[in-house]
Image (cartoon, rainbow, N blue to C red; front, top):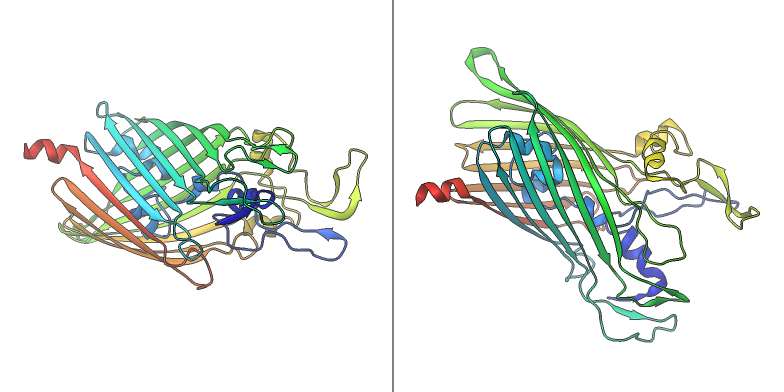
Length: 398
């Protein structure tokens, strides 16, 4: 890939997970940003094949080794003592062929009520050749990358309710210290946290069938803003609210099916509408409608519920929803599907997902496939693969 340094941040930092229009002028006098963009959007990418095949849902589904991304509070309910998983997804294959997301995660049960877990997420942006404004190469090609380390502590408060707190370190190196005009760039770093809860309760249906109801809430990536230069305002990282229920129905001793619906919302300010040619005494653009997005992290989280320039109707557009379904046979073979919906004005990601899973002794294999409703969408045909290891089963075999 070839990039001018002035466009690198917009292309790679703000737009990797969005496919909608970044801005739209309502008329000749105002500038109207639509989709909400943040730094390090790779933090929002579904890293594992199970959640990826269920419409990118997982806040309330049954706990597994990859619960770190979806809802860390679920780890307290895992009935195994130890496990880990490796996942990989080629990303944006419709655009380039050398971008990929790798994900390594594992957990350990301290006792019946407590668990700890950790993960490493690594996002490679392939090979990029930086150029100046005239298209001349600036040094050798560079391989920018981003990663984050996460750790969590999860605990059962009652037999049906758990909670978790997580800590994260985020690192984003996109420019290798290249100068953007007169500005010297550097890697961006941030410290963040997650707070999550999980509730589940066994159910008894008529005719003797059993099941389970679950509800999950996760507020992820609550952390400091990030910047790649020293003299520009910092960007928000993608703080996100994820909430939803799940219902499992055990058809018989061998067959079960789970359905889930999930809602997500970015807890960062909505960009206001600016006058095109008006500035104040500080040489800042004058706001036509909406609220300033130059606020603190906590203020931005609170403000995100009421700051949309077009009011409540636009706030509703900022809520993304998804549906997922999972069928298991004998807890060994799974078939999954889902649908993900995002407003056309807020990213326009609309796609179906499909996948399957297989468990055999120590190992488990999952894969997912994404089909966009718009074939021009660069997310179309996205694949994800996950390989899981059950250490309890390994010790039992020994």
